[in-house]
Each structure stands twice: as C-alpha cells, then as structure tokens.
Amino acid sequence: MKNLLGSSIKDLENVALDYGQAAFRGRQIYNWIYNYRNKNKNIDQIEVLPLDFRKKLKNDGFKVSELIIKERNLAKDGTLKLLLSTDDNESIECVGIPTEKRLTACLSSQVGCPMDCKFCATGKEGLKRSLKASEILDQILFIENEMNRKVTNIVFMGMGEPLLNIDDLLLSIRSINNDFQISQRKITVSTVAVPKMISKLSAKSFQILGNCQFTLAISLHASNQKIRETIIPSAKNYEIKNIIEDCKTFVRETGRRVSFEYLMLSGVNDKLEHACELSNLLKGFQCHVNLIQYNQIDEVEFQRTSLKNLQLFQSRLVNNGIAVSLRKSRGLDKNAACGQLRPVSYTHLTLPTICSV
Image (spheres, rainbow, N blue to C red):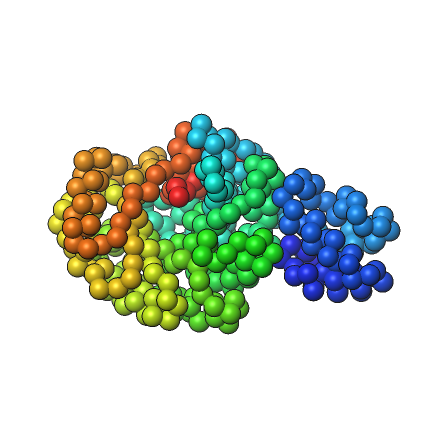
C-alpha cells in the first residue's frame, strides 16, 4: 500500500509522470489532498483526474487515508473528539479544539503509551505501536473535514510519547509545515522527557526540517525528583535537574523558549513550597509554565487542586519572575480533556478523553 499523504508536489508530479500523465496531474492530486473541503478520501473519486488514471492508481494500491472514523463526540464548547481505526484494527483518538480565530488539532503519535504516568488514561493500556507519519497527518484531515475548517495550530498532546516516535514525528511536522501550510511556530511537541532525546530532537529537527522553530513542552508536573517519580514512574531514569540542563541546551541551540506543563494535584504538588521550588528550578533561562487543572480518571484518586490554591501558586511563580499561564480544559463533558485519551471504543470508556489548549 502506497500512501500519498505527506507527499510533496514534486513527489506527486513524479507519480503522474510515471503513469504517463502530465506533471500538472500530480499538482491536482496535491491540491485535492490538502483542500479541507474535500470530504471524500477515495482516489477513484478525484474527479479532476482522468478516470483511467484514477483506476490505475487505485489498482496499484495508492491511498490517501489509512484511517476510518468510528465515533464522533461533540462537546458543549464545540470541542470535537474523534475515535479512529487503523488498518490493523487499532484505535486512536484526536481532538479538534475551536475558538473564534483558530482551530487546534490535538494529535496522537502512538497507539497507547509506554510512560504509564499515574494521572493519565492513555498509559493504562500500554503501548501497542507507533504511528506512521501518514497516520498522524490523516488525523488533521479528519478534523478539518468534520469541522469544515482549516486547522491553524497543532499540539502533539494526544496519545503516546512523541519523542519515542521521533522520525515519523518530524516527517509529519515537515508535511504540516510545507503541505498544510502551518508554521512551525504554531506547532507544539509535548513530552514527558526521555533521556538523550531532547538533544536528539534538536539535532534531527535541523537535519529533517532545516531548523527547529516549534515549541517544546515538557510535562514536568513536579518541583522535585521525589514527587515526580511518584506520579511519573519513568522519571527515575531521568533526573529533573538533567531535564532542565537539557532544556537550557535546547534553548541555546534553537533560540526557542521551552514550556513546562504542570498538572496541579491537590495535596501532591500544589503547595506554595512547591511553587518556590519550581521557581528556583526554572529561573535563569527562557521558559514558560502552563498550570493545568487535573481531569479525573477512574483508576486513580488524585483530586483537582482548589481554584484558590491554583491562583496562589500562580501568584508565587509570577512574583518570583516566572512567566506562567492557566490552561483552560476543553471538552470535559465529552471525555476530551488532558490526560484522558485511550485506545478503546467509547462504549468501553469510563474516563474522559482530550487535551486542553
């Protein structure tokens, strides 16, 4: 099977030429693929192409989409969560998060996740496999088709650990930038942090993309190593001080500030002493903190911190010179919030599911 999604104009022109067609037929395929108004994903229905050419492409195994939509859930705030099935009958989820001026696509990079963060639903199922670049890109097409709008922003905050699928991650970013015409500066890659992979991400980005202008977001969620290990088991392999040093190197190499995601868990990491620890940890380099309210899942008994504690925590960070924002959860009424995606059908879901942006 040959997926055309992610192919450049030149690639598609060569496909056309290989079949004895004029090069402009390749450009027609390209324009058809990336026009969000085209709802049909079947090659034999690209009506601008000669019928014989379409039949040959289909018979030779060319496709645009490998995913099938299984279920849709639309939240009261307009957030749309999609359950998609892969060719090998695995399930992934992606989310469209609209505002008046933009549409953010929250994308999955793996089926499941190996990191097993205690507050996250995705890891409870373990890792099945990583997604191909074409499967990552297909999620964008589904969101655009279903919401009848062009995606403007991308966050890799769905299922999976993106840095454990780094090659397909960067290939998809290249296509998002070149083919979907979405600037790297509107793309965020979120990671729990994997040893040696932050530096590898920077190096491979320059190799594959020519630069590194997307935002790196570290799911830190703790102000010290002890707390981090209790909520993120994989943290024992990567000291928090080493993560910070690697992030400082990333900033020097790319010129891009790093964001730190901090999930507020009542009685665990939300005290003022933790805010002071976090300030001391992060001061002195270009970064930003996103404070996130916890979205409940059934398997664990973490609780949301109170709004008062959240605001006090934020104020302490601001007073200590740390740039900070409060991230609003989206799609909670339809199981579509941060830390709640998992690779099963909605009929079996007992938890919420999406990211918040």
